[in-house]
Length: 344
View: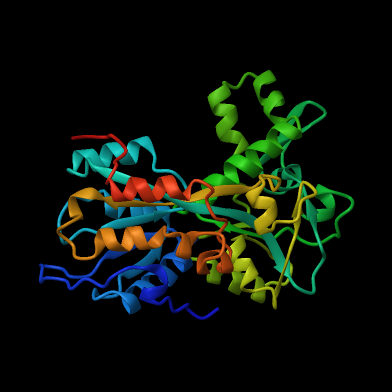
């Protein structure tokens, strides 16, 4: 998809000349899932405003929030993109470094999908299948044993005897946290493994951690880069199955096919209705202390969540973002610079 050109007249925004500051461009980093949306908005913003095009980098949600929390000033980023909510320990780090006023902006929703080579087997997964494929230990006859599964047929007799080769987001990505909570943890409970762990004497906290652990014998590979790296791994290994954001998959349907999860095909519609079980909100976090200091920062944030940009008929929806039904409230929050209430 080529970047969309939005005309100023069509969205009723007047270009504003920017005075000179130590840094005259907005700087953004973080989630590889949010990256394509932020890039579309940044390019359209640069075309329609008398501000430089914002610089948008990836690196993962955790890495972006780490940079965001380094402090306040022109040498720190203005916005962190995230495919998960900011964690309490990150809020504490931010506060310790003087980043006390944070505006949390939910831009919409996205689904996490499971895709493999277009010419490969068409999978119909459940969360239990993925737990049985990736967990280091599983339950059998009420006991916890080392995971013996080597092929997808071992996991589920309805599947082919295809070697398990999973390419999943690394731990610095927000997508990994959602994958753990909405796939592995759900599958752990569905297979009886969680109850078996408790029965074996594990504490509830330890059992929860064990439920989201991933085997380290080479059948699952953490991808620290973005989704293009995952796609390259599948290109190189036709048995590979990757975890992607819906938007990335939809831009690569010429080489990938998507699996169902719990009987539901991932689409914008099934995510919007909540029918598809593996979806999550997407965010960016804005440093209030930089508003009025970094030229165009608030303008960029307001532009990002306009109906004409992030609404159901906007370019982000065309790329795969599921529009937030509460977008109007988000627009008001940015206009009024409402923070998360973390400090004065």
